Amino acid sequence: MESNKNEEQGLPVIEQQFESEDLSDPGHQEDKSSHEGSCGELSSGDEPWNTQMSSYAVRVALKALIDNQITVVEYGAQVQYRLGNVELLVVLTNAGFDPLPIGLSHEMMGCWGTECLPHALDDSAWRVVHLLPLTLVGLTLEETLEVSSTFAPKLRLRTPRPTRYLLSLLRNIRKFPIGDYGRRRLQGDITNFMCFYILHCPPAHTPGEILDEMAERETDEEYERRIDEAVKDLRGLDWGDVEEKDLDMVERALRDAQYIETLTDVPDSNVVHDKTF
Image 1 (spheres, rainbow, N blue to C red):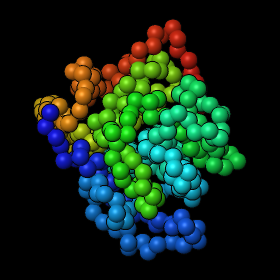
Image 2 (image 1 turned 30 degrees about the vertical axis):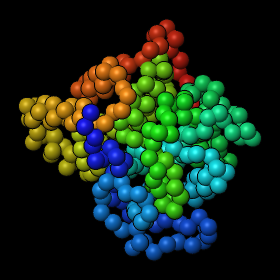
Image 3 (image 1 turned 180 degrees about the horizontal axis):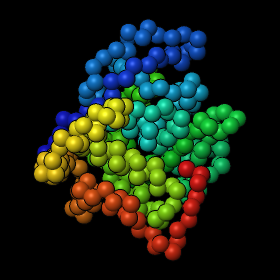
Image 4 (image 1 turned 90 degrees about the vertical axis):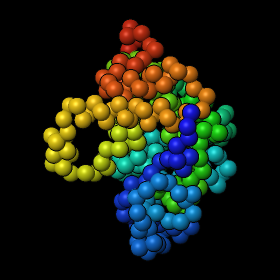
């Protein structure tokens, strides 16, 4: 399929200004003006950009993983930030090691079976690091790009290629039965990806009245035409080695939001309500 420039360079970073701390000196703060820039396609990350708001503990945790030569791949909130979904980074979800490194805590999380390692960064366990093997999320290193972190620009890590990330989300949500609490984050991530990356919706912090105004102005015919154009663009992306049924699944998810809510390979009789995720 025809390659797409956005696919090669990764996801765009939303224009949002925060101060960024230098991890080598917790008391030092860089000049805010050094982070000012225009919103656009993701660069190589060599120059500073506006960073995602996060706690110092989360930044230290990422640096510790990198310093211990653990390959880190963004997943979840960090990727969503690149799409335009502004949220405080509380849960740092990373994939990239396989098998799990020896010496890490083996307290497991039910939503990812016995393969996820959660690490609390404070006594209340409010700030947490989730460590996932790449095989668990269905990615390979070849399906990722090297970038700078969304919340610690001086640190280099990897982020999934957009098409592979979407396929990973859709395949992973099928592992959860309908009604499982663990589906919530995946459903939200899939919806956000469809909105921001494929349909080019306004950033998540756009005022509600503006969004309502835009929705009122768009007719049903215009909406259908926009979806058809998005499907055409979607199928023109470089998906690599992918089966047609996977592309059909992606298209159906784009055309029918309710399809995502029913997408599962698990019989309804096995529904569980795990609230650890």
